[in-house]
Image (cartoon, rainbow, N blue to C red; front, side, top):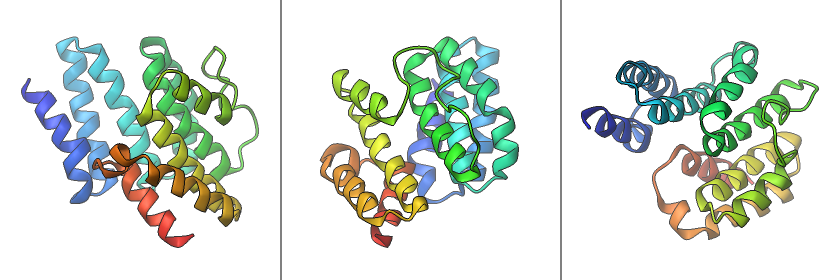
Length: 181
């Protein structure tokens, strides 16, 4: 229980006061603790947090890229739900690095692109995933220079009242990029 409280603090509160790199480091430490305690679900979730904070925190993209497929496969093996969030990181990574290939190839199933992921989020009423999808589309379209589409995605994310008010790293990035467009 103590570790779970620290994890909640790290992922939901510390994002306002601590750098993503530091959160990634803390999450990796909690990941190791969860593995040692046999709590696989928490360990897999923390692996997702580590990857997201490394990506959004400005770590070297080529280094992140080297391990992204293996980590995504490991995450998908234990939790397809968590893998759906990690796939967003992988799509963004592919776009930022100009890497060719299929970012969805690491997971098997019916999700082959961002539209499929959005449809899956809607059909399963996973508002958090739908919100994350919108936020990542803001960053992707901004990177591509398509500011009109970025603004539309930002508005879609902001209209999801519950998700857009919860403290999360996605809220920070939606606010930042939404302000730019």
